[in-house]
Image (cartoon, rainbow, N blue to C red):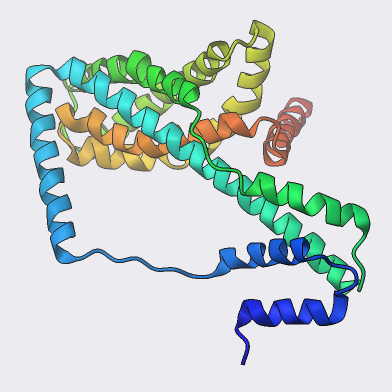
Length: 296
């Protein structure tokens, strides 16, 4: 009984040996091998070691936050935004790699289904697979640019924003801390002021930092701002409800920064999507709704 790859190889050799060379057979099998499942596991000692390392890291962070609150918030923000951008690059590379593999696999299977493989397709397969298998290299310049956004904006502005927002609502509006009105007011102000400001500064900064002109940055902001605001608008209010209700003020930026690890990956991914079809559809849909509203 032949295993999966041997049976595929034997099948191809029997049916299309005159038309497919060994190189193409190898490349075809190279595609199929990506679907082979694998597993990994941790032992108890490794889990215990990771737990105590995280506990030490948390205690060290608390000490730094007590002694140097602003510096600690700035450094942690820059670090997490950099890690988030690395995650975004990894996701983008994996997505493109999977897309290439699926495209090549579809082309080969279509050719097999038609009982013939065109010469141009055979020539194209190795190059497409080479692009798909290209070793992932982190763009450290982009990581540094994204980290600087965390260092220069999220860290210092976020620190004073959450401290000031809490004082404003407690002392000026005189709302009871942790009450429903207190939390709802905080979430509303944060969503109306800080959320859009954060997105606008991010996309503007990313544009200028990569050498784009004012006109190009305007186009990028117009293209990326609304899709990101809509998608984040469905998530961040929920995140902030838990933040303002249960997290002490001094840890609120840390809480946000943890989610910013995912948020920075998301925003970097949005920025790298450029004129993706879903973004074009969303912006055109919003423009159509705006015209209908003006017409009514």
